[in-house]
Image (cartoon, rainbow, N blue to C red; front, side):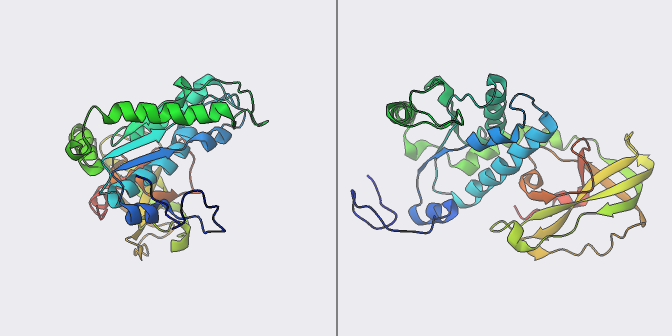
Length: 298
C-alpha cells in the first residue's frame, strides 16, 4: 500500500513543496518499516580520498549517525524494522575507505536495525555516471533499487512484523552487556585549573534536539585518584538539557577545582548528543563528570 504524503494521486507531478523533515514524516505516517539510504557524503570528508584518520573520521561519522539513531529511538516508536542502505560501489575513494564508512555506520545502526551493503549489488564503473565517480543513473540505478528491495523482502519473510521487536527494545538488548562494562570503567579524580572554554551556542544550532555539550580544557595540577598521564584534560559539560540553558557560571578561567570524571562510553546517551569544542584536538580523549552522566533526560 502506497501513501502519497503530498496528497496528490499517483502519476501527478506536484508543484513546489517544502522538503519535509523525517521526524515529521515518521510522526505523520507512523511506519512499521523504515528504509533509509545514506552515507555517500561521508566520502567527501576524506580529503585525499585514501587516508583514514580514525579519531577524526570516526567522530565525523558518529556525530551524524548517532543523533539520527537517537531520534528514531525517541520518535519512531511504531518502527519495527529499520533498513539502512549503504552507499553503492564508488570510484571516488579507495575500497578501504568504503569499508571504513560501512563499518562506522554499522556500529551505530546495527544495534537497532539491518545494514544493507550496496557494494554487493552494484559495481563501479557504471555505464552512465557523473564525473564524481559516485552518482549514476539509468538501468543500473533501477537495478540497484530492485535488488535492494529484494533483500528487504527476503528478510521480512523470516519474521512477521507483529513479532518483531521495537527499535528501543532492540537497542536495550544490544546495550545490556555494554552497560555492565561501562559501570566498571575507571573513574579518575583530578585537581585542575580551567584554561579555556567553548562558547555556548544558541538553540537554533542544534534544533530540533534538546541537549548540547560544550568542551572545556583544563590544566591537570594533580591526579587525586585513578590514573591519568597527560597534563591537559578535555571535559564536556551539558550546556542545554531539554533545550534549557544550564548554569555554567561556576566554571571560571583560572579557577582551580577537583573534578571526578570518566571517559565517554560509546553507547552513552551523552555520546550521541551534539557537541562543540574549539579548545582541544581530536587526540584528546573526552571526559564527562560522573555526576553529569545521570543528568541526560533519557
